[in-house]
Image (cartoon, rainbow, N blue to C red; front, side, top):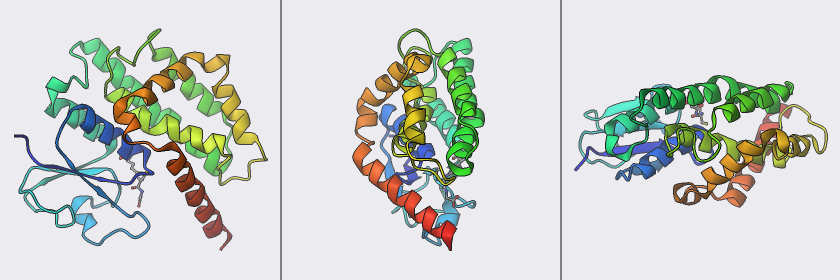
Length: 240
Ligand SMILES: N[C@@H](CCC(=O)N[C@@H](CS)C(=O)NCC(=O)O)C(=O)O
């Protein structure tokens, strides 16, 4: 039996979703605790001193998630958690054996983290040009093989981006932004993403979202409602 694992998550969080997918694909027993990010429990700093999700407790006694044991190891940062899960459960092959392919999976994650996410946030939060999003997506698309996942078999690279792309689509499809986009601006971005420039990425996204682990963890209408409420509450807070 493996060590206990508790994932501290929030359903809206792209980072958390990737980690949950990796745990599911590794067929690991784990508990999940939904952290209310608007009203974090006081004890949560014992799990993650910086207060963010995702985080996991690993090992130690089997305790209720809201009573984390001092004996468990506390781990955080989604990309580190993904690597940890891949290394802890090598039989799940969440990273390939081949060193060059491993490097490719890591490069894909690095571009998503350091190029795509800042560009996406900059675009809907600050009204920065969407071209930076397109450039980052093109870099990711270029890394994809003609068919299948980033390194052939599904890996932590696919886990990481699975948290991001479907949420980015919700943002664009529903014109959700904090920077005064004109009506239809998000939908115009979405039309480019669905056009010939991103044909391979579109197919790849379909493959990602067809995965049973993804389907079991992503309810698009519910997520859309949640994101609409999230953006409405941010807009209300901005006005205050
Ligand atoms: N670099 C972190 C980012 C995690 C992050 O930003 N999490 C957000 C949710 S998407 C969060 O916990 N926000 C609450 C807060 O910062 O107080 C990772 O990759 O795990």
